[in-house]
Length: 229
Image 1 (tube, one colour):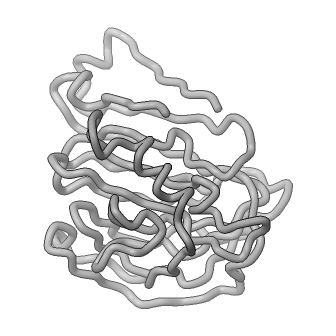
Image 2 (cartoon, rainbow, N blue to C red; image 1 turned 60 degrees about the vertical axis):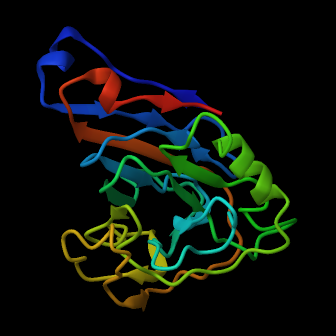
Image 3 (tube, rainbow, N blue to C red; image 1 turned 90 degrees about the vertical axis):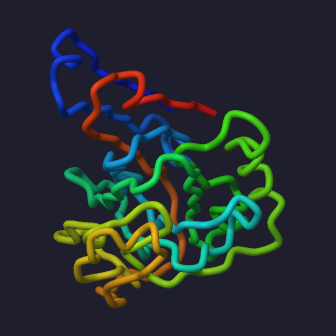
């Protein structure tokens, strides 16, 4: 796993700040697994595990491997062996940075065990004490089963305006939310879009996912605090 960030004197003067995460070793992980992002920031999930067949589904701290009611879900994104970028992405806009956002991979048909129970979970703005990311991941690894979510663009405290994409060439998706989510619906827990399938089966999978963040902020520290597990 490798984390890289580019910072220069110009960064402090710019209104658009960016932080990139590069996928290091293959594995059942989100890379990095836990990040901090301010309100209005966009968190981008890059489906760059090759091969890979993963989801990004919102859950709760208490039930890491079960969908949060009215939470977001990307659907299953299939990336074949040997695929080259650019890879499909899923963008979430943070609507409330005062509350943690928990998520998991709902892939449940892989062996020897489902991805969430293998520890493929993540967090945005996780607390540094008590309900930490490490505690969340430990709960996931002790879960009895993984519950599949329903595809949705709008989540709780975060919202996507479109499903993952582009799903062209060798990339495909199953149960991917479509349409455009209404602005401001994330904090109210609404959902939008319909489910569609373009040939990808939620079956075996490998590889890792990468997370990128971009946002608008006056201070670098406030914009991009990062917690690495």
